[in-house]
Length: 113
Length: 110
Image (tube, rainbow over all chains, first blue to last red; front, top):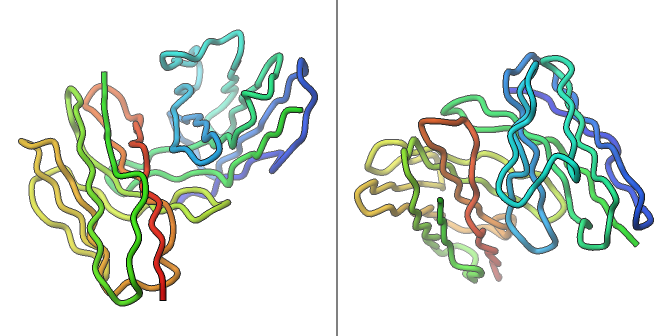
């Protein structure tokens, strides 16, 4: 199994500012995924982050709002830009390990005032 | 596109059996996952089905019918600690990403 850590674990931010969330994995993985989980909701995929190429965004998510970096096979960042209260969510990074399932980081709980 | 539906909430009694259903519509289906998520925690993997039939793992079993686009998670001998959200997710041949259903919040009462 993989160990995934995220920083920060939580933050309270003012609207109009940006927050960068870091995701570190203890092993090399090709693809990492970023999800959002709004209060009381299920997980929504934001984008797939491949090392060495641009992230692939899902419908409804754009690079200007959620820029992603993937500098190496163990690390990724997601930035939530120009935040509004609607961005208040838990943001989780994830990796897949084939049929044995997927692993999730502990999540970053973001509150935008 | 993909459409994955689950009941929003369910309740059950300690010691009972509960079945949580998941229906899906997706192209290039390549497997269905079930996750458990306790409040304030990340989801944890429960089961994976890619072929039709029942997969049993202790108190938890998962069933898949590909022709019907249907799966269920069966929880036996319910315990209070089983109170959580249960998420089904599907993946397809072209990508390795998981697309999640709406999630089912299960409450177990004594």
